Image 1 (cartoon, rainbow, N blue to C red):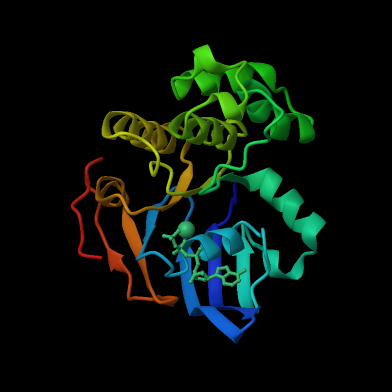
Image 2 (cartoon, rainbow, N blue to C red):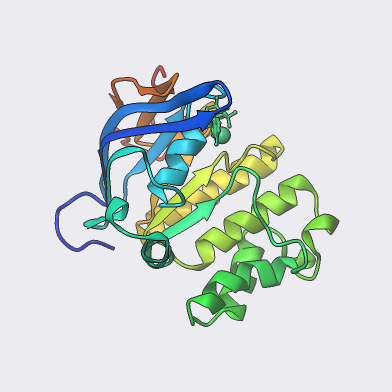
Length: 241
Ligand SMILES: Nc1ncnc2c1ncn2[C@@H]1O[C@H](COP(=O)(O)OP(=O)(O)OP(=O)(O)O)[C@@H](O)[C@H]1O
Ligand SMILES: [Mg+2]
């Protein structure tokens, strides 16, 4: 975690375009914002508005066409892929929209893998987090033997097991029934309260967005003026997106 007063994430004039058969397609237009350590932020917007693209750039999974992203004081955008991966391993837990579990590994092995790659004790932390997401009985199952919601919970356990300063999660309740979703939302915010984890959550779920202190709303790749929310309790007032 950063120890000075600079933001944990500092995004400046981010612009992202891809080349398609029909020519260049601009996905994100001149986006700037900061997120401080221990904040909780929802990224909302309709399908195709650029939420997953933005989240991937924040994690350094890809480089923006233009603009700068600083994570924990370091310019992600100045690092090569290995440098970005190392910074990500140190600070970031990432929950992909499509989970990205390794198909030949069990649930337990999937959660252990990033810890092992980082040379950290893995088994106990992995078992702890699978238990926290309610999957102790599924440790030895491979992704094919798990439901979509169970796979999503394995992905959440994997992201949390590394005790990241920053959790980036793409629709973490998107595949869950409302009771399981509520349980996962509580887990996210309990971890934020206990460990000061910064949460940046892409979501279509108003229950989840309204629990966050702030909302960043994307509209066709443009960031609308952020609506600040004063979260006086764990059930913050919902703001219009
Ligand atoms: N590599 C790519 N090549 C071409 N178009 C892309 C590429 N990646 C994303 N897009 C387009 O950019 C837009 C934003 O995509 P993105 O996945 O970020 O949307 P989203 O807000 O996460 O949507 P959803 O809510 O459906 O997950 C979409 O129109 C998508 O088709
Ligand atoms: Mg998406």
